[in-house]
Image (tube, rainbow, N blue to C red; front, side, top):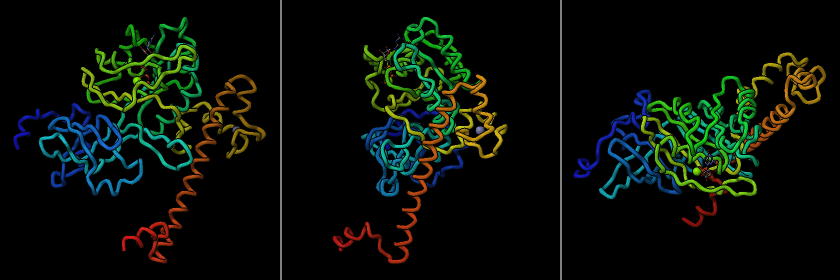
Length: 368
Ligand SMILES: Nc1nc2c(ncn2[C@@H]2O[C@H](COP(=O)(O)OP(=O)(O)OP(=O)(O)O)[C@@H](O)[C@H]2O)c(=O)[nH]1
Ligand SMILES: [Mg+2]
Ligand SMILES: [Zn+2]
């Protein structure tokens, strides 16, 4: 086809493709590997070896991908078939996600949503401009999200130009976990950016996560070396952002790294297992074996080493408070997931026994 020659062939490794994916698809199946670089409601921007296309889901895929989590998201690798010269493509399936940043969909539904996929490094961005933008508990919450995703976390404390002494804030974050890289930056002057850039090597994918208005897009512009992303003013009163970025987008940096800019999340509810808390609270985890009871919940039990550490000032009280809060959420989520599974199971049994799914019955009636 003529369009073949129009598109410049690109090497997939510049999009972060790694050879370990070769086993995940075959040349015989329809389509070719492509990466989602921007997601919309029903259309996705993809880049494959033949260039950039706008893609929709194939009919078959749309019918099977009924849950939110099945839908392609920014950073995903998909098998996509490029169609006619109008730059439209069809997505047939999503290749396995090597990492996935997932949160619970707000509200009562027991469903998760993948914010970004195949991310190697999560930058948790907060700002030092006062107001509510620096919040250790929220950083811990983002850390739990990052740990659960399988990506490595790092923290960026931005807007250091608006803070007289950023050091204590950086120290507080470093105290959360000694292995956690913490950067103090100013996206306007570029201060601290070289440290961030050093983590961004060719073919590596990072994602900017954090509340609205903290400067995620401004940081991306800095890393790009040009003003590609629109940035927005923050409200004077409480320094909160106005949700300037409205879609998730993957961009290529001059040095060959990939960066995903995301809109500030209004609400992050965890989606994951309690195990991920161990990585976020290594201090509590280290104390737990010294509790008198092996199943100590660090609440009211006698001989609790965690409470003991708080009593003699070795552990800040807010640290345990947040641990208990996040653990409570994850336990509730686990219960909801269980109830959800039981419902699905009951429905399956009904279908097996009676051959009819009650929920579908009226619709079938209509079709007949
Ligand atoms: N003084 C100062 N202002 C900054 C810095 N970084 C960003 N800003 C400003 O903060 C405002 C918000 O920045 P954005 O980059 O739009 O924030 P965002 O995190 O992308 O926000 P959303 O897209 O809404 O999630 C803009 O007016 C930026 O110019 C910084 O380091 N120092
Ligand atoms: Mg933005
Ligand atoms: Zn205990």
